[in-house]
Image (cartoon, rainbow over all chains, first blue to last red):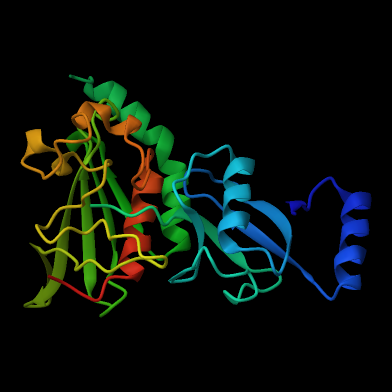
Length: 103
Length: 161
C-alpha cells in the first residue's frame, strides 16, 4: 500500500499510525522520472518491494516502464528487495528507471 | 520515411528540458547541435571515470529512433580527443541483459543501429519504424529516457570493450 504524500493528509496520518503500531515505518521519498521535469513525492512502508513502489510511481507519472525500478545515486536497485533492504532512507531522491534489459 | 528537419528540431527541443534536467542530476552535459541534428552527451564511465561521449544522430526522429554511437576521450597533447569505443555489458540487478552488445551497438529498440536494415542484429522487432511498439525489452521513447537507460546500464558496466 502506498500513496501520494500530497493531498492525503488525514488518511495518510491514519495509515502512518497503523504501520507504526506494527513496527513498520514509512519512508518519504522524492521520485524523478527522466522524461519529466517535475518530481513527485511518495510515502511508502519501508517493507514495500522496490519493484512494487516503482510500478506505482510509473503509474502516477503516467508512464509505461518495462520492469520499473529506482536508481539511487549510481546504484540501480534490485526490484525484489524491500525499500529498507535496498537502503532507501527517508528523504532520499530516486530516479524511476527500467531494468528491462536489452539484447 | 522522411521527417523534415524543422519538425525534428521542434520535437527534440520539446524533449530537451527533461533530458537536460536528467543529465544534470547525474553529472552529464548535453550539447544539442540543431544544424547537424546531433545531440551529444558528455560524461564519464563510472568504472574508470574516464571521459565518455554519446552521440545521437536524430535525423528522421521520431519516425525512426536515433543512431547512437559512443566515444572514449583521451588527452593527447593537452587536448581531449574522442575515439570510437564502446562499454562492456554487465547484467542489471535481477539478471536482465545489458543494452551494450559485444558488437559495439546499443541493442535496444531505441537505437536505429540495432535493426537488421541498419546492419544490426534484430530482424524480429518489425523494423526501425516500429521502434515505439516493441515490447518485452527496455522501453525508452524519449531522449531523456534513452539517456537514462544508457546511464543505468553504465552503472553495471565493468569497463570498456
